Amino acid sequence: MNLFNIIDEIENIDPEVYGKLSQRRDVIKNIASFGSKVAVAALPFAVGTMFKKAYAADASAPSVVDVLNYALTLEYLESTFYNAGKDKGSALIPAAAATQYFNQVTTDENNHVTFLTSVIKSLGGTPVSKPEIDLTAGNGSGSGPFADVLTNYATFLAVAQVFEDTGVRAYKGQAGFLLKNQVVLTAALSIHAVEARHASAIRQIRSQTPWITSTAGLGNDTGIALVNGNYDGEQNVKQSTVDVTTLKSATSSSTSVAVATAAFDEPLSSTQVLALLQGSFLVKK
Image 1 (cartoon, rainbow, N blue to C red):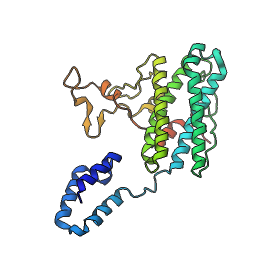
Image 2: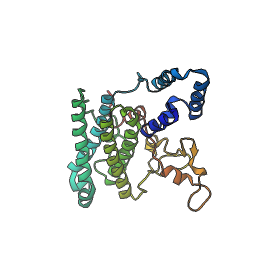
Image 3: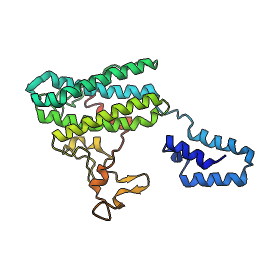
Image 4: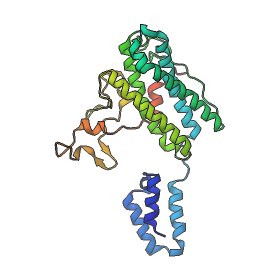
């Protein structure tokens, strides 16, 4: 039994295998210790126990249907937003922008709602109902901080950018919970990629970089302080164990914080996202 080959093969499927087992150094140490402490015949059982613990079901982890219903809630929000904007017509969105971008995005978001609803049913689950939504972020008052979202094109664009950037990070945060169903994972990642394209496009419409570019202390680069929480964590410059700013760039012996943060996108957990949305855009019951 070549344990190193086995772990390497698993790593091809699950890059986080070492983190689940323990730190890589500990894994090597554990494997080495088997040779002296465990009879060769017992190795399969010892290794099996190690992996069983690493991949044991986490009772607190959401089910696939839970994850899909969470995604459906976010898609309800986005589809409601874009359909409301579309209903305003050229009184809100310039005709050229609607043709080149917003009509397509509205169709995408509606399709995401239809798709997720269908998948949840196919898995024997019950799709969540569409939540009550306040596009002004006023928790049902209709007079939140984005009160003119459907009458002021600049505000509409700003809210669109926040929704798209948050949506991308939200999908990423759930990918690990879908590993048990590769078909659903692939579909979710396909939606994630589309949301990322939406985010890039809306950023360009707002004359911003197509990607999030943070400072050392602030992940939010939108210029809207109200949504700092939606971008919290994007200021991270450390990936795995590597501080990206210490790496050589094309022109220097180090990498700037702006480049280091722009090169990576950070996930948001469902708890973080719902804490940001419930009581603002999603009316809290």
